[in-house]
Length: 406
Image 1 (cartoon, rainbow, N blue to C red):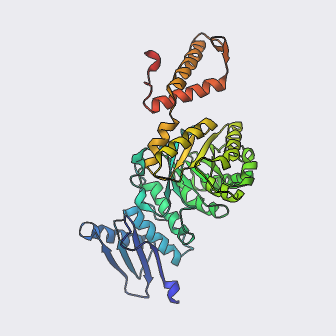
Image 2 (image 1 turned 30 degrees about the vertical axis):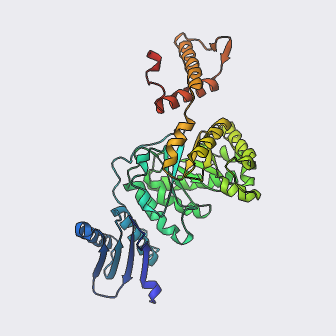
Image 3 (image 1 turned 180 degrees about the horizontal axis):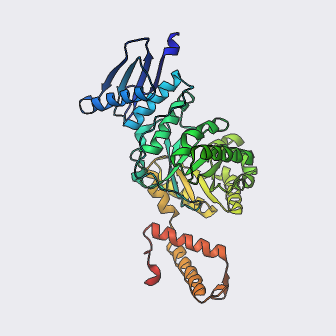
């Protein structure tokens, strides 16, 4: 063997690294397993780090190797992901997987109608952001395997994201993963489908075929792994062609729960600069909302890239709401509260919704098939929208849960 075939590494090293580690495996012909651990917390956790390394060597049946670790406060799920990524570079045909235990709080499910006001993007190769993300109370947490991960780190990120889905407490947030653009994204699926992922974001979607390919691969993996939980799809429209085919994409599968727009790539595709005002993307956003509503799924707005301008963010959310969007992407935790507040219904909207829901409930109690409010007839979509407004008001603390009894 030459040197490239007997040494492999994974992870990050350097003074600025935190909550991560660097793992190097050097294969030897004899001498058993030797470990070398440098850690800022070696006094407290050096033995447990070494024990995990030995456990993984036993699991993968490594008999002779030198394992070098530079630790910067990595949690066990990160250390094991870095080790496995390095090992698989040496032995890519080994199908065994080393799984951390499932966190006791990670067995909940989601639904197609789940509220998705906010979704917080976390880079797939930055484990330092994972443990506390759920504390900020986003509706969803996205572990991103696409744009936030350098091409050279794609493989390593898959192991991190897989382990995070199992070991990190999401505090009730919807569990999302953005896969890579197809065909690479199909390879991502085996790392995430078996580990209670709720929603898969499908980037740069330009046809129904993309959605169907992802759904087909999911079904194959679910059958092989005996997975029963529902997995929903959120295609992201990021090009002129995607906008034209938005309805085709939104209606491609019953598993599509929402249609999202990504304006950084879209504006680049049409050759204009993206602005906070968004005039250059008004047509695209309106078309996507219309396509989503026609298909009976949610419309989700793009991220707001200026993490310091909360006033502009609030204005952007208010505009998105006025267009028919039901959620917005977040790239920093401080954006979540503003997004939730801006999507919250106004007092006028709440009062109108209360009247509609009350009229609907009264009609049902009387066995009436027709619902009216004053001289106006109320149809099912209006009632559904009013019920959604009530749910939002309760969620934001603007209305008591037992409001009808007050």
